[in-house]
Length: 151
Image (cartoon, rainbow, N blue to C red; front, side, top):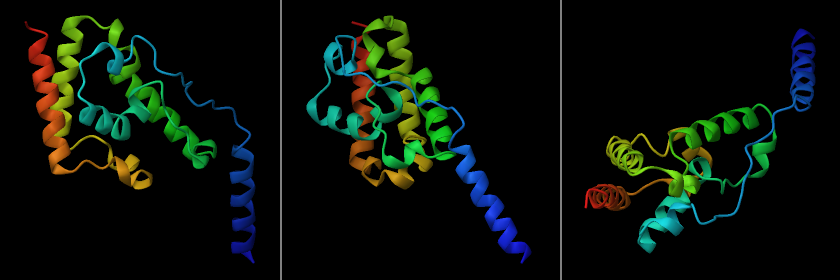
């Protein structure tokens, strides 16, 4: 009998937390500040970055059905805010050269260390997983793009 009360209370809490306010980060279509517009990004790299990075690191986040259900919504909101703070590809054109060089170096490093995409994201986005070849391409692109800002 106690477990029925506990389950009922848990279900009530789950329903009630849905009404707590927590807005997901805004989205916007790409504009003239977007990496793909301002940078010379090869099509194969655009495909990889769009699939594996843009949900958290741009204004083009896609929100599946479960992103509107608390507490998952809270985690997604925090991940996107953190991702956009680290690098927002939608604002690439606003960055100074030194910042772009640093971010490109960071991209290379986190890809080498397999820190991105984060494992939690990959649970629901299996297509975002990077193959060894895609990792190598991203690292080579980030390193070459960083180098190009020195010339």
